[in-house]
Length: 224
Image (cartoon, rainbow, N blue to C red; front, side):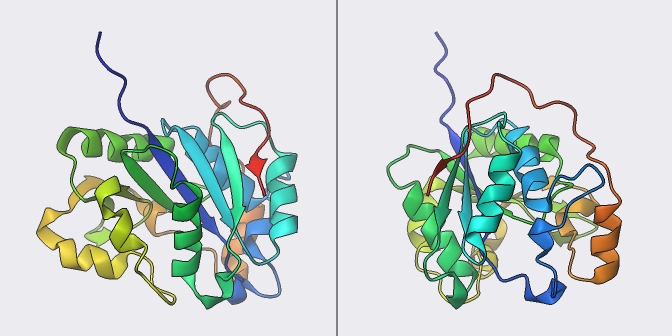
């Protein structure tokens, strides 16, 4: 019997203050169907072949959790953790997510931003396929010569990710890996942002492009 592939866990970082989209919190802005951006992102990640999803909240955590819960169930198990010191920067959210999965066996960790409602599940699956084939330290989507998100880290990189501080994500670490990183082709959604009123208006008028999430319902999000 062929053994099952080692699991991949996804972290969705959604703890920031969303200051560039003030007075709105962009993750709470709803699309034309009434689905908030954060729930759209969770749906997109859960429609891939990741095994488990952890959403890291911080600023306005209660509202974001309510928005996520309101659109459960999801196609994959979803749990929620809160980064107590999220105001110190992106790295605090990343560490909180990694700590939340410390006891969970995983071959790799997919790090995704909360404002990726148009993320393609098949892109995530290509990242996972490349990682399982070659086991590089990091696997990155690229479009038009630029790297983007989400990023899939091998489990051997978790100790180094835990040392990041301030508002740095894994970009500096990726630069040190350089030739050892693997890439897969992406599209314009890997660079997408919603930091202006015009972009938020476009999202508010949009419709989900995903079909019904596959697989049985695992129930509502867990954690606190």
